[in-house]
Amino acid sequence: MSSTRTRNRKDRNNPYMFDPFFGEIHRSAIGVLWRWRTEFGIVATLAAGGYGLARAITLVGAVMAMTVAGIALAVIPYSRRLLITRFWCLVTRHRIQRMCWETRLHTRSGRLPLVLWIRPTEVGEHAFVWCRAGTSSEDFEAHTDDIRAACYARDARVARDKKHSQLITIDVIRRDTLNATRHVKPHIVPSAVLERTEVVTSRGRHLVSRFTNSIPRWFRRTPASN
Image (cartoon, rainbow, N blue to C red; front, side, top):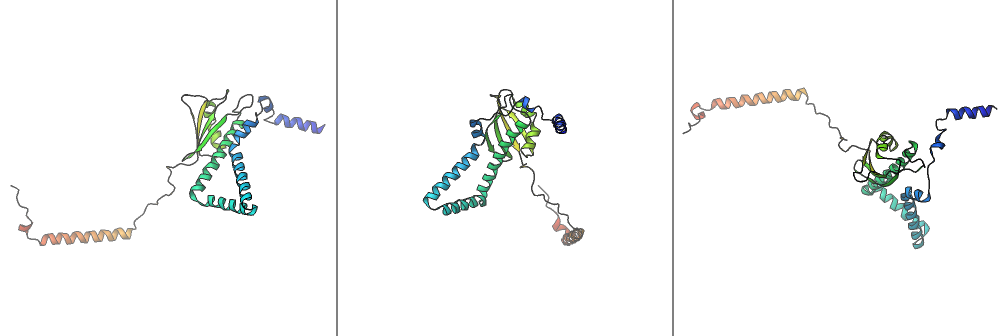
């Protein structure tokens, strides 16, 4: 009897008790393949490459070759930056999909907006999203703060395509390129240096005036202009 009362009390205090009535997320084989296409492609490429190397040399040699290749990609600056930007593209894509589900930004049948393509930019990522029937760009604009928080970003901006209203772009801003990373401290000249500078300047002026006074007055006159 007590367990039944406890369960009823938990159900009454549960804020997500009515979630099954609003719809459940729609999952299909094609949708799963599309959302995880990059991860499946990486695993398939590594498996095919490792299998080919194992047949060409040995299994130990294939593991060592792939390890050296991974270390080289992580050490070289260009490849390291490329891997980091692509990693954040994957994170942003999955976080946008998760945000859409958590904020109920989907259709009544549970279909999430489709992230068609995402590419890195100088300040973050640029995502192209297909809004299904029942969602619009205004819905995403109302959840820019949720997008910003979900993607661990500094800011997020949503724009609608001028020709096709079902297509929107989400700019995830992670860094500000105009913000100075190195702050230059103002150089304060010591008072002793300023005093020495004033003494040298005054002495120089005194010497110049003495030299000027030593020149005959008739020699210092400028010729009259015709």
